[in-house]
Image (cartoon, rainbow, N blue to C red):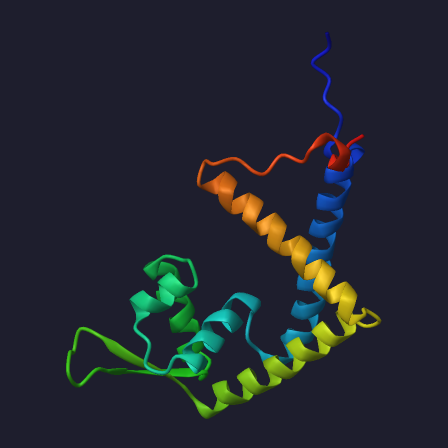
Length: 167
């Protein structure tokens, strides 16, 4: 018995996963190229959008919502503030906290970014029917459910033999 394992891309699951990852990388590259014109780096966009959508959010809550450490948020906020995209003022009720707001310059970046996101999404899904969107959404939901079960240690739903795509 050999210890040889087929490369991931030699299985139907591996090929789909590889294709999905290539799509995600290409999507990121396309967005980065288009978002460069805003002057804000990709990782900063997410934080800027979050601040815009949640005015006066705390740094701690911002870190939680973006799934990063408070130190990472502090560095990002410093860069956004230095670039003139946000302003921080000490909270009048509690001087341990800063109120973070998006400046006029930041508002323009949010507006431009949303337009870019929308254009890329429309182009990315051009030619798909409503039925194809519904089917794809169902597939992604099922994949997410399987991953959540794995994360919780419950294991994923195992396809019955007739549905097993590896045969």
